[in-house]
Image (cartoon, rainbow, N blue to C red; front, side, top):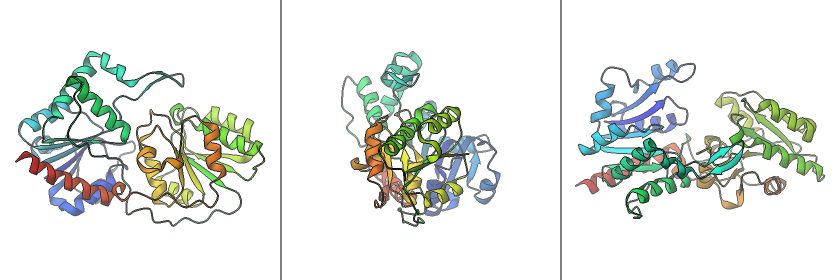
Length: 359
């Protein structure tokens, strides 16, 4: 039995779960989650009976004894240690442990300072011991997460470098590898941003880049911002003051509507700072055949975008330069390993390799 264990039913995890259920057979796969997502997800559970809650009968024993456990969004250290002691294959997918510490929108301190907290330090030491075991595999979500996990190992093994492979991981789209099927946008360049309107998302950078282009004589650039959040009112005021009607705001919508919006825009910009560990909207836009520009500090951008399509977070000039050259740009290709099908194939290969290492 193979179990995927997460905190809630997640649209970021379902494509991989569905691919595993097909490849392994529904009778050999379970998606175990802790709490219901907002609004519940009964329809999904009824259609896909391999989805079970962690408090249902037999779920706890399943997590303890299944042949392979992949845990994401959780750090059940006690469970990991019990499984590894029994020689059961245990995989841990993780975003950054040491996200930089920001205060009032400014970089305050490196995230590794979290190790000064006794509880965090104890947990890190236990994970460093787990990482030595052939039955335990880390799947870092983005290159910064990989760096953090190697740092955990070095800290508690007297500076030793981690010798085993860490398998680059992410959040995966379905059904396939970025087949362009967008409706070409008419008129000027149409830029799209989608997400929760939080400070860490740095939408202000994008608004300022559009303002810079328009001030420089490019009045054809427009921006659509899709989402809600505590920064929305301030961003609406900023956009009205600097860009006028060139920036439109839309409430958050479902993923189906987001995909339709992607097909009606020319490019997507992902502007977050390093506190945003991955950025699933990048994966979704690539699958829609969109050119994407993203910040170098985030996982999805670093893993999925070429360097020529990345910019330093907060760098208005660099972002404006990228947008200015975007009209008619070819789609950003989706790496096949970061589709649900590619990830499932890669994951099952990792499990087979672990079997060999454990013999």
